[in-house]
Length: 111
Image 1 (cartoon, one colour):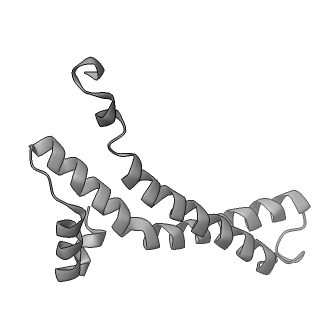
Image 2 (tube, helix red, strand yellow):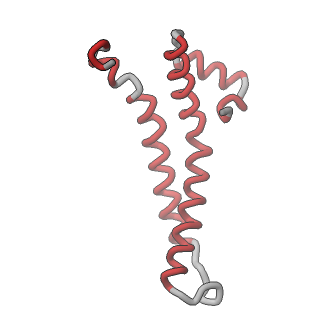
């Protein structure tokens, strides 16, 4: 398959992937660090320092992941629609996909 496609086709999904992953990581890590500075597990809840650290990391990571996923899902949907269209033999522009999302905002969270 690689030999039948020009090298420019090998990286066609790079931009949409970066548009999703870079903001996700930035939102996730900022949210995680902020939550970690604010969330404190009391000694009364867990006596073990190791379990407290594990629980704090889990809570902060889950919360940051949820927020980052909700905020970046529309961008991921754009990438998925583009990939689906390419497989189907059609090609939607980013403008067309964004227009669909504007007309039906719930579509940004479909699938």
